Amino acid sequence: MTLLDKEPVKRVQKALKNYSDKLEVIELKTSARTAKEAAVSLECEVGAIIKSLLFKSEKYFFMCLVAGDKRCSLNKLKKITNCNDVSMANPEDVKKHTGYTIGGVSPIGHQETFKIIIDKSLERFENIYGAAGHPNCIFKIDFENLIKITHGIREDIIE
Image (cartoon, rainbow, N blue to C red; front, side, top):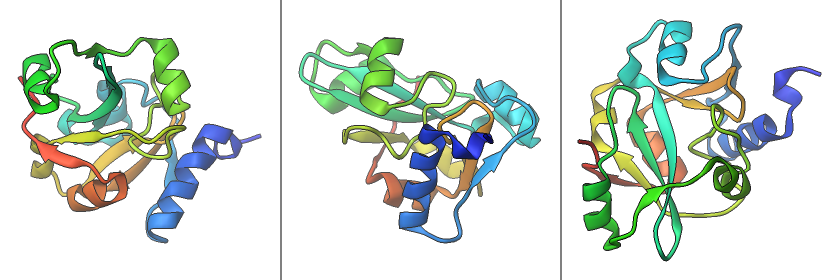
């Protein structure tokens, strides 16, 4: 069984194909578990790697897509979401709500639908790369298509 046959990877593949025939999952020979590893594997800047981070508030879960070389600002998230209690989701919640394990959390193809907030600093790259359900699988996309495929909102969410 190849990585492309794994259920989480197939979910990403399906979401990509439903959006565009031009997008596909790429299986890497090396790990893309962290933004730094992904950048080395792809020979690109760390900032071009999309970190898919699940957060929770007192009311709901939401995802932030952040450039690999940036840190998400909890204070900005509290203002944007109008919630005082915002924190990173734990690994169990990430798996339960997204269907992915940490290291392979994709910006698309989640188990549940939730609000997605996209860091504006990703705009500076022609191509950006998101995890595709496994630490060795990614997909390439541009910023405008990332917004469209995720139905995400563009915000300044970095420190």
